[in-house]
Length: 258
Image (cartoon, rainbow, N blue to C red; front, side, top):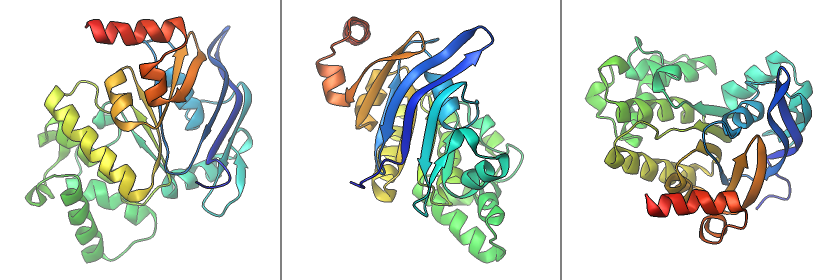
């Protein structure tokens, strides 16, 4: 494991008017690590994801990111241009609704090729060949390369969104309920795919989910949120098999009884 974390979060919070969506969050994320953020609706997990990914501003505290050059960047003071550069080259974001992360009226190959063009690729044959390879990797038939995502199933759209994000070899990927709304069998297939890609590319991932089974399957560590604060954190197996906080115990027992 690297000596320094990829993300270092201290006392982070985001305020909506007169209330905090999340507050006093401390966490470290290491290269190659998957961190699950769990909790019920309204617990603050999506707000925290917004803060970490710079989609929401910091109201208090700090978030530091160590980039590919080994520089530590203070995300709270980073300019828009610098954040955009991170999105182009080092970060990815997988949305709950694939329509938010894809261009729905651009072909599957165009969706995967576009980030390459943004990063300076100009050879059409190379772009198409790379897009084809990524469709294979995410288990989309390559003869669908010229089809639009509007013609794809929900699971295929999510797999295409993953390909679009990973084609530029990011170091850090944020995922917002990526399996929500999919059939159980489709969810399982998607999680297997994610797990293999995370291992293959050594990705660091922050995944928000209300589903503890998803956290167990894919994450190394888990933090549990309630009312905007982290109330428990640790290795995923420990948190889910031996929860200390009463709220976590309730969450786990409700799954077991369900």
